[in-house]
Image 1 (tube, rainbow, N blue to C red):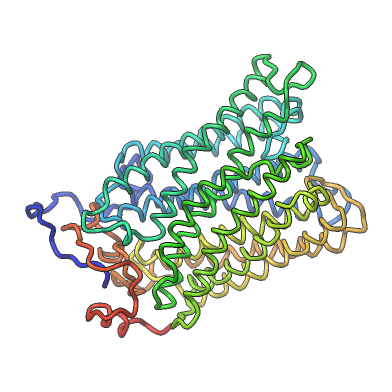
Image 2 (cartoon, rainbow, N blue to C red; image 1 turned 180 degrees about the vertical axis):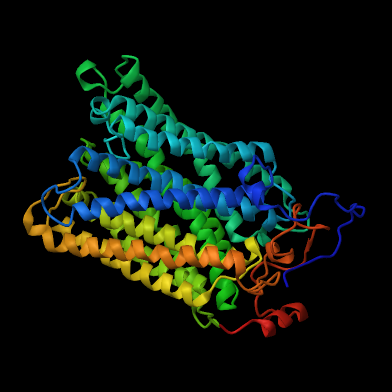
Length: 553
């Protein structure tokens, strides 16, 4: 075992009079425990995932024929806008950072809670009203300008709905900033003194880099949206081209945040991958320092790639060259992680659990999405396929394949720690198979659609694209069906699944040294770190015992 329960030099702590675990109704209150907040994030985000997913299915059903059949084009635009917004701002970011980050960071660094518990709770409780505002916008026609809200379209369509959309994004942005401050302070100031920086779990490195990136980029988006709000409601003309405003400036403000937002979503998932793969491969992570530092490198380089989204916006040639190079450079630290995980798998004693299947599935998805990103980062190719379905296929491979597969891997991996129950493995494999097939069936043909010239964000299209669109629609239904075994598995396992031991995977990071589920203040006595988090196979009697006890699944 990496860490032990040996007491620190501090005097023995008195037994706590409070109950050891929370009751179910505590999860519906303004609770300041980081574990409760983490679960609140995860459950709330999954509800929004279902809502956003239903919008996607509705759009794919409409696109199964070339002409609009049952969705009014304005409603289609509103579904498209809010599907993207919900999936990014209310599903992936809150679950990956808020959910896993809150539940795991204090446990992984040996702290009893986050640095600012009340601020942490406030950050979560900004999310439900943000989602409510987004859904409320449908009463006023729904925001229809896409998740980018480019002016002048966002200035002339459904002004009340667009205003609600902006307020919603400002709320989740504020939540993100508050949460990021908390993560940075917690990791820097509250890790146990016995934990060296070289023993910090890679998930913590990933959350640290993500939080710094969020603090640097999120205020820029907030500024752009507030100015847009003024243009819509108070007669200003920051972005009104007919009144001297400049729409390209909005694009710069938007993409300065929104391309790093991809890394905000994917960096925590990279952290999850770095925890799941060595545990289920029973092998030390390959290139610990390289993977840790590559998170910081992505954080820095990621701030200098936003213009590759604007190659068709009158961008000067010199700028296209600079941002093509910077976009290709960001693939280097990303590739470092990919090679590190593959090298970890190589020769490992792989346990094909559901968590591991999703982790391996993510590898294949992200490689396809990453290669698509390299092509789109190159100006000549991007000019050719800009605003076509090639772009849709690419970012769904990155964001759905890269993020959602990682979230599922994390849920299967840490579910025993969160609930004290094991998830059902056969149901997990069915869930993985449907998700894997559905993802490829839905998004791979979109590349072909884009290369043939089908534009995105349209409810009607040329009949020559019908067959491929119908294939994508079938894939979307398979993806929708994949949620059913997962939901059944979570609910059934949480209520009556097999009871989990404190460390069912024989992992070496600190969160596995406390009970499942953890006590309210995590440990009765804070642990002392004696080994690194991935030292499987090392010459240590404790570790040898764990290796021998590792279950064969």
